[in-house]
Length: 145
Ligand code: DQA
Image (cartoon, rainbow, N blue to C red; front, side, top):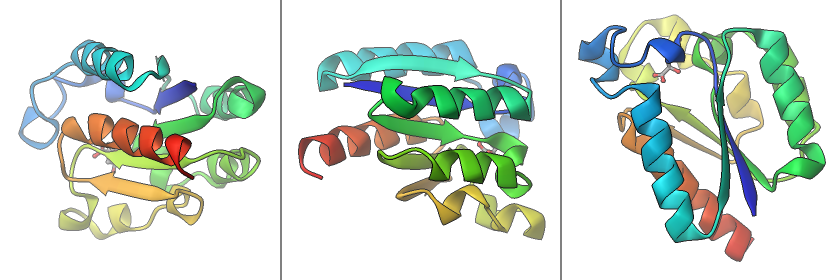
């Protein structure tokens, strides 16, 4: 089963950007770990990042028919994007929202997520381990919905 793992703005700077909050791993490190785990779980991983809201919307639309599930860290678009929520609402499979940091421990504006109105599960504050946890959840949901 194919899974899209989509990453929003500034996640290309992972490892360099506020490492005290987001850690030292780069997005390439995260992708490598996710790919290895997906091999174990029998999932085919499509891992992407964009700084552009419309590109993320396009990818969520592309997932219709192309992917069984979506793992998404929408970055700051989490807190702003009705368009991303609408796109996710047009996708049928499981959606797991990931945040590397604990968004509830930070500024108030990070505590509201448009994407959470659609997400089946949310993982926050588990560092980059959150991606692996989300993929395990996806594998479980696809095996026994
Ligand atoms: C983030 C949390 C968001 O509030 C922030 O804008 C990000 C990253 C996280 O992974 O912790 O860019 O989604």
